[in-house]
Image (cartoon, rainbow, N blue to C red; front, top):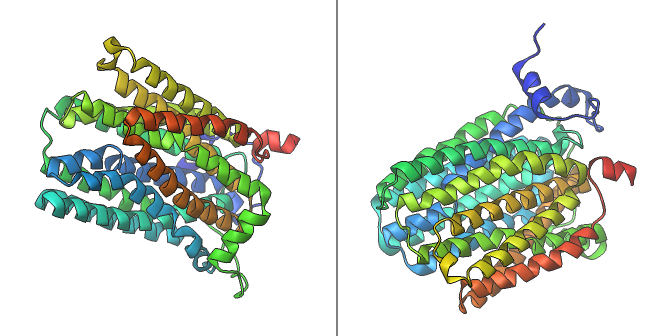
Length: 439
């Protein structure tokens, strides 16, 4: 008898350790192939949508097209990233009362669809400050909905997929979204033209929003075993955060390492800024950067996913080394007049940084899921993301202040953070795959 499609895909895509259930309930263990393929599909659809409303590229291009104030563009990345992280610690008590967490993810996906739809309508009908601040407000709503999917996804992953396979789930989702990004990037490059039409971008964003509706439908089919509600006297968000950061040394160490890994997240916007100063306006100029994001996901997703299941700690360290080396090399090349205006320099640098950031993202997601279990995982994800949101605002403000001396000064500051991340990451305890078992 031919196995179901989900099982065939699972066997081809995910390397397993002799079918180890990893302590999963019998019903959930039997549904691992279905759960794996559905989570890959849902996360891939979400990632594909993310590429269409990327704050670093598409939304920045859109704000320029509608004539929004420059101040709005500077707030895009902080609002998008911090807005999705800061609420998570406060959401933990509410989430812990949910015996089944997948519906929280579904609600977050529907919320992101609604927010993206508002962005598309504003792009098509408004201009200037109205469009700019309206899109930023919609982005804040998007980020709040994203906090639900971010918090619930790691919890559902830990409940439904055994250790040794979780990094591959994130990796294959990145690969699938990379295919979409490459297609989109090539289309923008070939058909985009030299003018940026806000209505065309509105259609692009609106169609991209549908990916979250599809993702919600796919994720709803995940098989998850209900778990009993915790005690009503569970500590509040602030008390939980203080306790974990004060008393849990491995977790505190992870939060510090994750903050220092911001080199791969915050450097790309400055590369795009420098590219803009060299010319290349219009939708066609946006194409190479979207294409770079796709290639990075396609290459890095599979590579970093498997590596994270062996050692997510070393993946984060390797990503920091790569991102820092690329940033320093880029700064050195900029000192050569003949190379500073080369058309290939900025998209190539962006691509390499995106590959490093894919490693950072997959490594840290796998690490925090493997570091804890049960409701402790929910606390770890929420508190680390909330702390990261605050630290991102601080680091972003410092790098923006340094950027008043020029984008190159900000890049140098971020490269220093990356250098410090290497020894900090090496001190993290091993929690993933064969290395953790050997330890």
